[in-house]
Image 1 (spheres, rainbow, N blue to C red):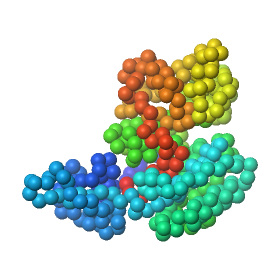
Image 2 (image 1 turned 90 degrees about the horizontal axis):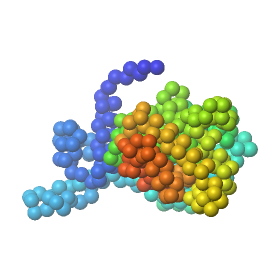
Image 3 (image 1 turned 90 degrees about the vertical axis):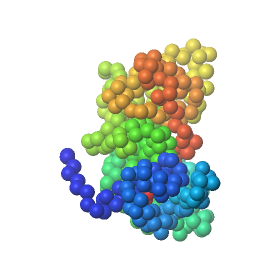
Image 4 (image 1 turned 120 degrees about the vertical axis):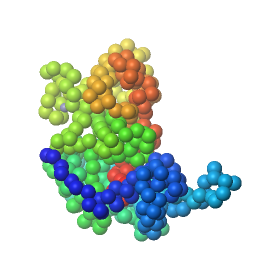
Amino acid sequence: MIRHTGANMETVRKSNRSAILKFINDNGPVSRKDLAQVIGLTPAAVTQICTDLLGEGILAETGTNSKSQGAGRKKILLDINYDVAYVFAITIEPEDTVIALSNLQGKQIAIKKCKTDGEKPPEEFLGDVAKSCISLKEAHPKIAKKLTMAGVGITGLVDESQGISSKAYGIWDEPVDVRGILSGKLDMPVLVENNVHALAIAELIYGTGREHDNLMVIKWGPGVGCAMIIDQQVYEGRHNKAAELGHFIVEPNGVKCSCGRRGCLETKISYQALNQIRPFAETDLGNAYEEAVKEGKEKAFDEAIDIFARSIVNSATIMAPDRIVLTGDLFASERIRQKLIAACGSYDEAWGQGKVVYSELWDRENYLGPVAICAKYLLF
Ligand SMILES: [Zn+2]
């Protein structure tokens, strides 16, 4: 479908606001004068937008630029007030569900983890999630008034425009109206996104995307997830099915995959597949590898990593991202990361060290995606 979208005054106003806020988010506090220069708007237009944003509490004045001291008038700098709103950040994955309370910068106020219960009817399970949210809210009365919305990141196919989880592999098979159910129980707006797309948006706002426009974000564990950011936007593709790296066919007539095809990358390198080479805890691939070396089984691991690297380099050849960002439990092992990066570099040195990077958000990846989708909606 081809989109034909015109730009009315309101669209232009929003886009100018977003540009100002994204610049401050990526570069830190800035004066109105410098903003006008970098954004390419007149000083009067910038002043007007900033006055609105100050009035809404989204921007705050933060003192002066020390560099300008002694050189005439001091500049007043503007910064984003990320405490202007708080959100529930809910991540639903096949094993665990994480519920966090956070400001718009990902500053965590509280966090709860529970088992994802796919056996329960979805409405009942989401009812439990809502109860956890409400108990977090009650435990933090000071910020309760500023709790504005909830963001949900969920495994599988998501129709984010309707807030529906169309197919959450390993959780529930039928479409579930996550937004409808949760917004009723929480009495607030709810945004729903695929969990890896949400993480990619987190990279865009808080991570590598502050310096680069085009990213490939790869999440490893328990399966393989991938998202492409092109010109600062997540590329969704037809039916939101873009960037299914885990379903690259790497072996003709191989093992049957959850998607219905045979020989997908996931059938070779998912947690389940690697666990068959040598059992290990999900966060402990590094030790499993060490043990496999002792037992003479490392070849199977090396082959899996090599197939993964080849798939990554092939995808990068099509997309030509500025950076490939690695995230997820199975990348927690530095040894495995380095092996993968070296394998990528062996196929093409352009995709080795420096271009393939470990996410700087790794210690917050279990809740930052849903925070980011809310921040994108409210600020950018
Ligand atoms: Zn597949």
